[in-house]
Length: 256
Image 1: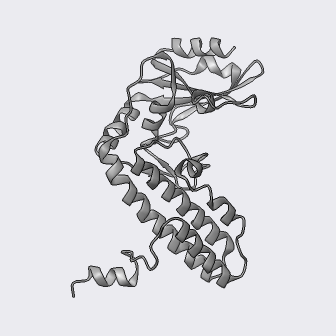
Image 2: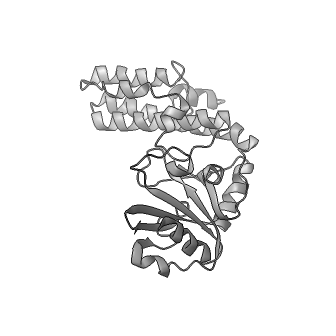
Image 3: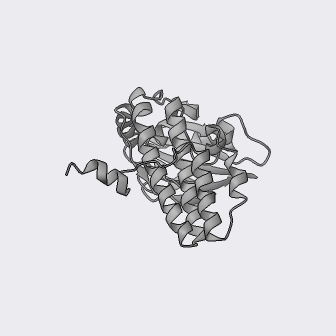
């Protein structure tokens, strides 16, 4: 049934390629794994043929990066079809080659989804039909992205400290978790390694040890402040780091 769906997708006007992504595309699936099919298209795409198989979300309904897709059932198999507009993919690939990217808020993401994730998908998927461009990790992106992510990591940690001082357990934990994801992105970019999403981001970046620390979040404010500093230490943040928004950083920036 899934093979038949691949044929249907490949035959749609506008389709350029159909790929297998997710755990099956990476060769890491198990018996419970769904099927993740990527549909690359140019111009417009008519999804009418999918309506009888499940819920269809048209292009643009999931944002400019995630685009749209469909949650389908083929016999006993659950299949997610993810739409990718190749004109948009080409645009962000060119930007990544120049070391430039944006990060969009997206449901289910802590640190947001970087626009270069479209390149990561190209590099990780298994081609089933058609052709897709190659996506090596750009040298300029490897240089520009780590400091960008670490600026945000440090900002998130400062907000975690602020929440901790006020006894806001949820705010401190949430901002600290965001900082961990941001540091993980920085590490992978330094390596020149694509990140598909946040699901295995910490493990891939070598930060899985932080799971234990997040299982020991204290409630009392003073202890919570120290806990945030422990997170910062495990992320390799220098003690007494000077940031542009700190009093010390402002003093350095002010020539007067």
